[in-house]
Amino acid sequence: MWFKRKAQPPIRSLIGEGTRLQGNLNFTDGLRIDGEVDGDIVALGDAPNLLVISEKARVHGKVKAGHVIINGEVLGPVESTELLELQPKARVTGQVNYLLLEMHVGARVEGDLRPGRTDDRPVLTLASSKSA
View (cartoon, rainbow, N blue to C red):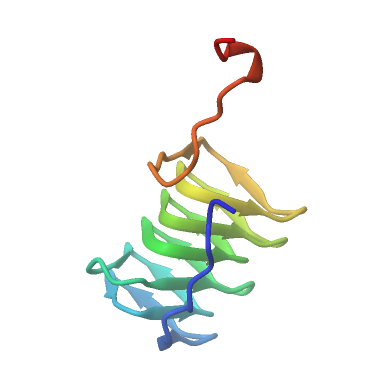
């Protein structure tokens, strides 16, 4: 398999339902958003990180993290440096950059989907192109 699931970092921060945050937000480890954020959300550092945007959450700004799970609404660009999961109620308006993508039926993206490259994935070689 190309991608091995690693243990998820712990969710140490929560923007709860009914909470509205205005301004940019930086985090490490894990962050779950159930409320509204009007600003950019960016994971810091090279350590594994996780961002969960729940079904009732709304984000208006840039989103950038390693493992991103979206089941709410994002108005702005999304960048996932590892795995992007778009769950059934995900609604994304903006450019989406990802290394690996898991998209469930019902998820909606209005914008460009741009896959990244990694040297860890095997290169596809057609059998007919091999020399005999």
